[in-house]
Length: 188
Image (cartoon, rainbow, N blue to C red):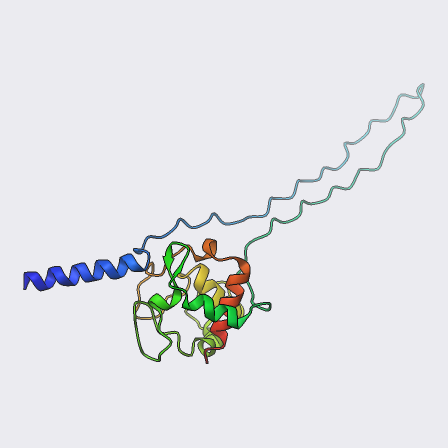
């Protein structure tokens, strides 16, 4: 019985190590637009003494509110190349993390470490509209992108947060992310 427990613990440790060990990268600080500078009304002028000529008055210079700082939204995939995304999906490693196919099967109902991605293109079409979804995506492309770069935004039932590597948003270029999303959308 003890040998069996040790074996299960070692096996579980290896699986977690293969998928990034469950360590989470610190969440980026939320981007916030700077508060616009308050505009001040011109100070009231005092009436000049009758012996002096009146001083010319200037109209107040309008102030312009600073431009809002850009916030990083999930990348849409209009320029994605599905063939390049398929090749990227099949890579054994992405940066220092295991590649997609190391943890996700494309066979319906087959679990490796993460959920099967068979039919994910179809599921993504409505996933962002589900009541329990708390992410920022407004389309299937955005939902898939968010699922890759912020995998804890929506965790599939039966799986734990933190298992999928958290650094794909830094490891993948925007083009690679768009290619991968384009490929995933083909999985009907």
